[in-house]
Length: 66
Image: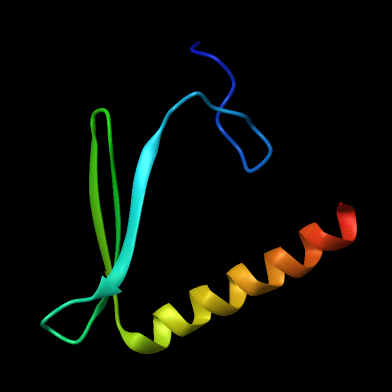
């Protein structure tokens, strides 16, 4: 069995670049690129808005912990 699975609280030494922007097809792309990683993820605007709300909720929760 390999090591423990990665989770939200697991630290990692992996470095990656993150880009977010609109595509010419009217989608929102989150693009992750790093060593051995080339991951474009496209979302319709409604899905992207839900993701943004989840990120903002996580920011608020992290501020309470800090």
